[in-house]
Image 1 (cartoon, each protein chain N blue to C red):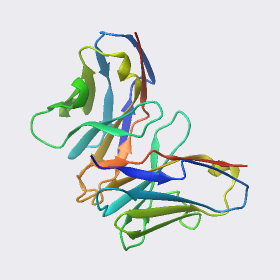
Image 2 (image 1 turned 180 degrees about the horizontal axis):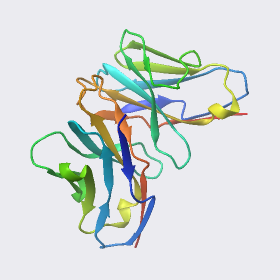
Image 3 (image 1 turned 180 degrees about the vertical axis):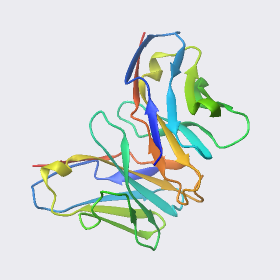
Length: 116
Length: 115
């Protein structure tokens, strides 16, 4: 089956630093990748949608200058949390989809970010 | 905007008991419906999905779900649960007309199955 990986699996950083999270589709080409955020005991909230080679579409309330998304190739998308603060601490999950809007999304294992 | 509601936050069952997890959505148009499962320490996996046709959908590991349009529901069922079904279950919806297939998730239901 389709596999999506994320790196790193967990990261601890100091407040004010930037953190980059990678999302890779290992055995298929992902035309679209999604980034979610999950707070403890809550559901996944979509942050943004990225299509290869174009700018990401951010959900309402998500700061695009804070959460930079790049989808430079059909197998890689990156999320950079710029000038991270403790309130950015969360579980970030990506998913990837091969084709049209109704195609199944395959999820990565998530990245736990802790900002001190 | 569409929303998804899962009725139970935590369900505790004994092995061999029957399971039904509720899911309701709020959207009046065409929807695509999904159930995802997240086993402890693992990533989200697709259990089953409904796009059209037979409203009773069968998924992996003996799970099934029924789409009842009049009730805006897509409940997940399994006749006899196993200890290995212990996981968190998420219902999700793609509302029709969303060009990029945005998934809206419910809050999740934690299922604990005692041996």
